[in-house]
Image 1 (cartoon, one colour):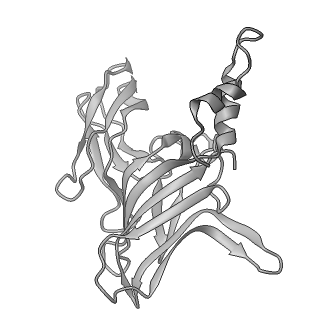
Image 2: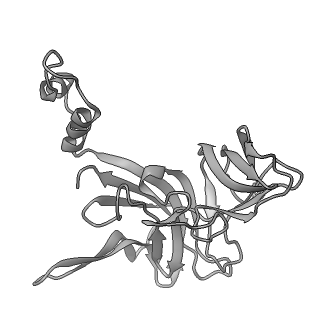
Image 3: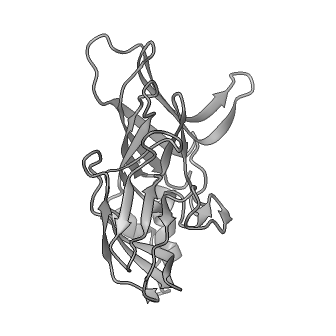
Length: 258
């Protein structure tokens, strides 16, 4: 649905002379518009035949639709060092002053291999180590990879304390195997499904005659006699031919209210 003109939006609001307009009044208008919201833009380097394995570059993601810090889906209590974290702390540092630090630039140790830049964080120190963090500026272009691959993801460092904390960027879309990728999510906006998420894929670099497989979808649909949706939070994407896989640019759009 296209954006509504100003007069139509105002027509849906209560008369401010009769009642105070609340946040829920405004929210109800936004959700009834059903305009897709861009929640992700990145690249899948789908090179499963190499020793490196497939990697993902997250140019942009909306954190409201992906895993929250300290949570795995809707199950709370994950440690900062847990591999499920988008920003997994490999080490918590030493000599970190108590309380919140100011914003610090985050150094990308893999800058020669990854264009990731711009991330700024504040960290909370307790007993010399990091116990919490806050993303101040998200940045973009950071690379994640297979957990056990030759390049498991960008290594990041924060210049704070006597020993710098180190971080592994695990990303919000993660290679599983073949043409399958897992997507993190959070309880505020629920699962990514075929109903509420629109994927779009464009091959990154192809020559004439290179394609015999070209697909991109969220989850699976069984049918046709008894259709049913399954495998939420699973992205399946492929561009190539035979055993040859090619990189893909991916965008994900969420349908508000769906």
